[in-house]
Length: 119
Image 1 (cartoon, rainbow, N blue to C red):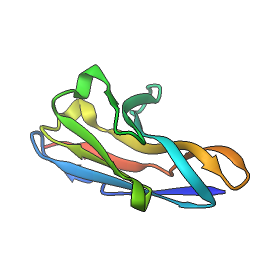
Image 2: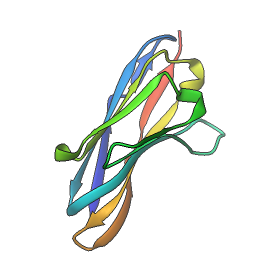
Image 3: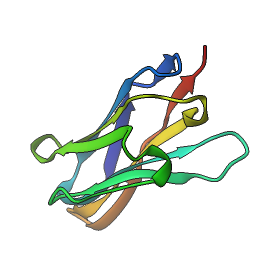
């Protein structure tokens, strides 16, 4: 079983920055893709950014140029640096990871961390 634990959410003013972290632990052989999703009240969960184990990245159009995803493969950890935050970025942010564990392929989600952008 693979667990994901997120940290780094909070309240920030518009234009501010936050850095989210997500560490994977458990019976892991390798992690192929890690990503961040978000869900605002009354809306569907959406992809924010993802990164492969080779470093290829993908971003939602709404965050391009403002958010940066990175990962430390040795630590099974993914980060999301969020700059120039807007009130529209307010949501619960979830970490996601797909890979190979001791019991086969896995897909896991974190518990979510709240990000609130407000003055």
